[in-house]
Image (tube, rainbow, N blue to C red; front, side):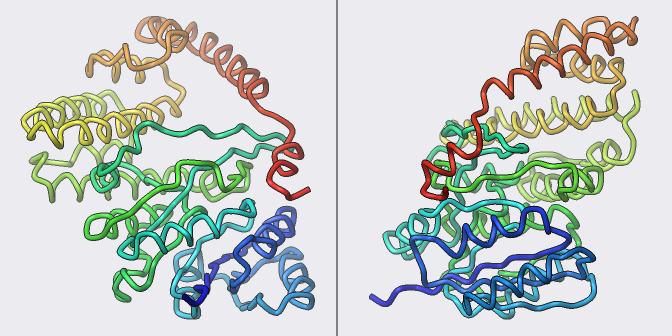
Length: 367
């Protein structure tokens, strides 16, 4: 069988500090039949110079440089240029391990009807990596249901199969700014088989300039919109107004409405056939944690306390957070001090769980 061409969509916007590592990780894949479509979306740093320097040494890189149009327009432009039957996503600040493409290509070869494949991740923070572990939530047959509640894959880990996905479907929708991947994954998973290699094949970088950090509020609003559409389509709720409201403002009133919404959703899930109920319960639990974090980020402990009290879900959060929040209703200042201490402990725990990035990259043949 001919070796499939993997077209890599690489949007680039002011990625100078990280771009060389990202490019090298794609150029030195075990699967070498690749083309890298690098679209410089109006960068004002030296990103374009870096791209041109690498292209001089490797003609597999195609560069498009133009004014800034945003991520969704850039991704769709890259899809139009891609020649491969398999289309991979990659972010300019992440690192793909050398076996990533070969592992994913092999899975598509084994399962010709597979439309989409993602992988697990390691988390790269500064010069240290937190190793990823398999997630038990990704059970066989549940990905379609889970895709209704959250973004089932990290965007920079996926490969799309154009032999399976109809051309009109494989496009990002500008209606879902900063959650365009969530929307596309749920549409594909609703109609076709999708899979995950639940092993870290990408180092996902977290830094202050990432899209996730810079556009968190808008991303969450789009996320809530998608979940509302999915739940309405499945007839799991009658009214999703509470989701739109909490995305606009976190208040005692919007929290009360949200709590009623969650409890109603859970009752409806319990009425589903037992063979599908578990996946819906898993998805709803993930969505609860998304909402919990949205409210906690307001840094008003009295609001988080109200959310947990009205949903009755104190048992779902960590013990030290629970103790920090118990005083939230009557002494928010005390909760704030305790939560700040908890964040410092969490930061230390993350550091102790991490290892030097160089050791992981060396183990993956990248150093």
